[in-house]
Image (tube, rainbow, N blue to C red):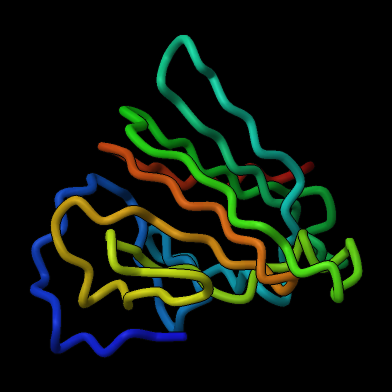
Length: 148
């Protein structure tokens, strides 16, 4: 559920190399990735000794099969995983429903648009199963890794 942007100022402290459009597309440079239709979550990795988190998504479109979009988070200050709804099949844990931001007032499947994100907000990945991954960090880098 999108929260109205009028409540927030655009003043985001997160250093990142991507933008989010239409709540589900990731724009890196001149490339746009449809995270709902073309990618599935493959791995969530946590490096406890370095304060880093990695989210790896697999490209599912036939012509790009095997490609990966990896999000690397450094300076991680917060990581939480919201509980999934058991009514959904396990496969829905891998399919993104939205990408947005969250603050201390954001609950459940609520999120704040990219252009309305305020300082110190966490990046939030929401899945079809209603599970979400919320990461507060200093830096987030998205990198596409193609296959031959």
